[in-house]
Length: 248
Length: 341
Ligand SMILES: Cc1cc2nc3c(=O)[nH]c(=O)nc-3n(C[C@H](O)[C@H](O)[C@H](O)COP(=O)(O)OP(=O)(O)OC[C@H]3O[C@@H](n4cnc5c(N)ncnc54)[C@H](O)[C@@H]3O)c2cc1C
Ligand SMILES: Nc1ncnc2c1ncn2[C@@H]1O[C@H](COP(=O)(O)O)[C@@H](O)[C@H]1O
Image (cartoon, rainbow over all chains, first blue to last red; front, side, top):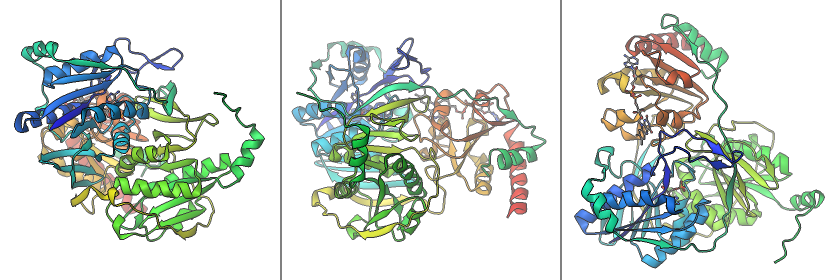
């Protein structure tokens, strides 16, 4: 089984979000970048397929040279090879088009992406990839098994979950549940050394027109002071929620 | 290549007058329209007011669609098909695409429910549309078409410009609200042609808790954190949720430790919450937690530590021991309910 894990390179969850150039660009100053959390769960699941079912695991990112440390981290965790499509990831459709080309050339059986990336939060790339390549698609995937050419996937739905079956090739939008938090791997010294020797292929992008563009960013309005209510006066809280906030 | 000049305003209006309609997908569950369908309809009506379009809804296996009229829908395309009884992203996207084609819709609107977010990117590719998800307001301008959406998990907003002729918008829950307007929705049967390839994914089983409010649908969410000490103490959280008609949720460590199911984990890496009221009990207010729940309108924190960061993000706060405050609050709410019903 050939697996491709799509890795989005995102600001660490503790990052303060600021913008530069008249609020038209994300300010990367002092920001740590990491593997998108949803993709990290997927990468770990891919490692299990590799170890238990003999799969090969490639990782891919559409992005500039600055994303290579993130790809190297994925290699240190255990991916076999990495691909970087050398272009700025401007919009979900643009990224999906670039990835579709990688998928068609590599003839992957299983493509693991994340439900969404925590920066752009588009939740677009895996679904668009499925539509572009014709592969099956399961979103918000919290469990996945593959036997031969058939996959059984568990999908989180509002208020529960459902189990579905389909043939490969399959694209998933994964999240926590594919593996647990405690299953995530931190690269060790040996992994880091080995990662240096693994192949990282840089591909030039296909010419594709994006369909959306973030033209400006805004930060939420600063929050007013909290109104404190004494624990001995909870009637006041009930009244505030009823009369002032009008939520009960 | 010469780029044609954009039409002048007058011409645009005439073009609009022709047959344009904004299409919404009105999601239903077990034959009943979901509340978010009415919110999407309200948004479409307001947008139609700006552009001079009409509003058409497409509904799949929904029994009673008349209520859509109350939120400004002019026409409902009703699809009834046994094959569509279980949700299927590709097939549903296909139905919406065909409806958009028939209506010549240039703007297609969906919600941000789990199912809608699943089908949206597929629909976007099929329509050749640019897609903006998590939209929180009416377009700032329609030419160029610019909408505000959340980004960086609610830590910021981005103004996104969609450059394609057809636009797909995913509306963030509770960002627009319900707005009534008088229209009588005409009903029309709609029979899309379904392709067998659309059904290559087979649903084996669905496991859904019935009778419980889900985080996605909830108006109020009551959430517990590590301050509650252990799973055995969740009785009062459930009771508080019960009196409020709320869904229960939790912080990430609580689900990681197995005190509560993963499906209750909210935050940047869990479920997003956009409720009217969010009550946090024994939750410190870490940046990743707040990012995921910030879209909620009103936030209440109950925490014994006045320095807990949550107090900076909340509208109302009680500094106190949850084991005393929560039971007392439950009593007060019961009294309030008794007087107000
Ligand atoms: C990559 C990454 C992603 C993450 N994603 C998420 C996410 O999506 N969601 C999330 O929630 N977290 C997330 N976290 C974890 C986050 O950083 C915090 O660790 C977590 O939110 C803390 O949970 P807590 O508030 O329940 O626990 P704590 O931080 O331990 O806080 C417990 C609180 O309870 C209070 N308390 C104690 N006793 C009482 C009492 N008797 N009465 C009242 N209050 C009491 C304490 O004062 C304290 O403020 C993420 C972390 C990382 C690194
Ligand atoms: N630039 C990118 N390179 C590779 N994969 C990506 C990229 N952007 C998004 N993805 C994948 O698509 C998923 C959803 O991203 P998004 O549509 O941006 O929310 C991510 O979790 C990744 O798996």
